[in-house]
Length: 152
Image 1 (cartoon, rainbow, N blue to C red):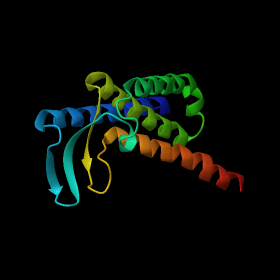
Image 2: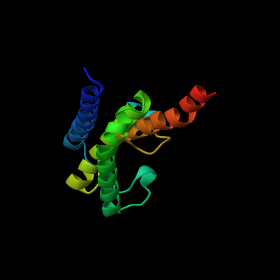
Image 3: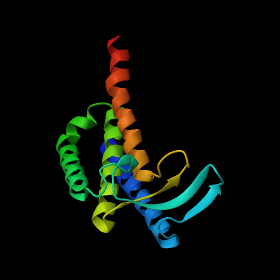
Image 4: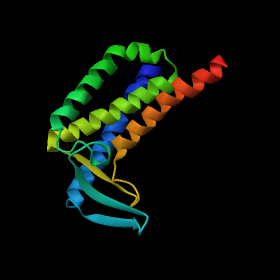
């Protein structure tokens, strides 16, 4: 399977997984409701987040929608170049885009992002947030660590 086809499946799989889990959380819990999975450590908690990471920029929906749309357009415009930039940059960018698109779907659909992973020592987050963080980490690793190792 080509890298582009794998990336497309990865993108769609990430968005679908995130949206399906969010749909299930919305269907089975009320906002603010929490189910302990490992008491005092990990809960599934239904949170409607009106902001970005850690709740910053609360209720700035247009800012988030414009930013996500601009990122998506740039991603599509530069995709051919990203494919040639190595696996970490390619798939990291795909993960980042998938997370941004999935959270954008929430914002369009509900005006909030649906979060549910609650480790009690960190703000509640979702699958899309994991994709965004992992994708960003992969791209940064490729830029700053791999390039240094190759050059050095």
